[in-house]
Length: 105
Image 1 (spheres, rainbow, N blue to C red):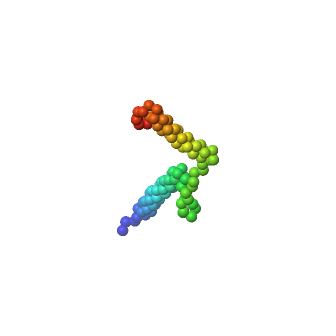
Image 2 (image 1 turned 135 degrees about the horizontal axis):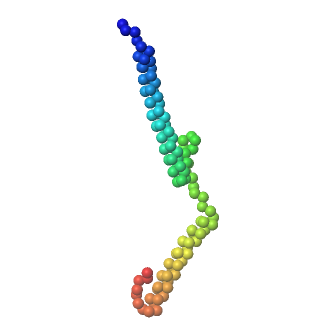
């Protein structure tokens, strides 16, 4: 038998370490991608007031609407309804005075 060289004795060990390092690198990149996707998804859900709690549950938040904002929105609807009602009343008065039966806009 021929004596084995040092290279042929170490080659399987080096090859095994290279393969294990390659697999570890791929697994690490997949892990980083999964974390990045999870963080991005959590940020998008937080913008919609949905939060994951530490125990894995989903909490739904309610957007805070200030009193002044609420009153402004409500009042604008009442004003619009009032103005539309007045337009129809004015149109009916004009019809009665002129005797024409035109549809109100």
